Image 1: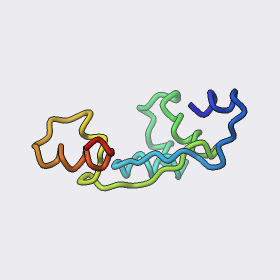
Image 2: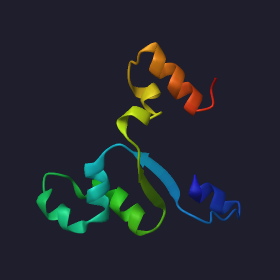
Image 3: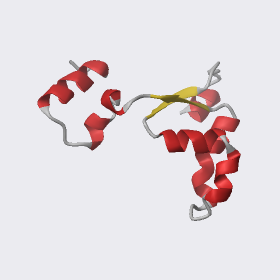
Length: 91
C-alpha cells in the first residue's frame, strides 16, 4: 500500500503500525542476536525484521483479549464478536 501511495506522490510521514499479540516475533524483530538461535527458519521469513529496521513498520503490542483481528480468524462467542465489531467500527 505504501508503494502504491508513493507512486501517487503521497508521502507517508511515519511507519505503519502493526499490532501484534506475539511477543516472540516482536523480540526477534528488534534483537538480531535471536536470529542465530533460529536456524530452522528460512531467511525469507525475516522480512519483518528488515521492515522494522527500514522504518516501514512499527510494532505495537496488544494483549490477546483486545486483538480485534481475531474476528476474521477464529470462532468467537457472541460477546467477543460484539466487542470486536465495535472496535473495528462495524456496529
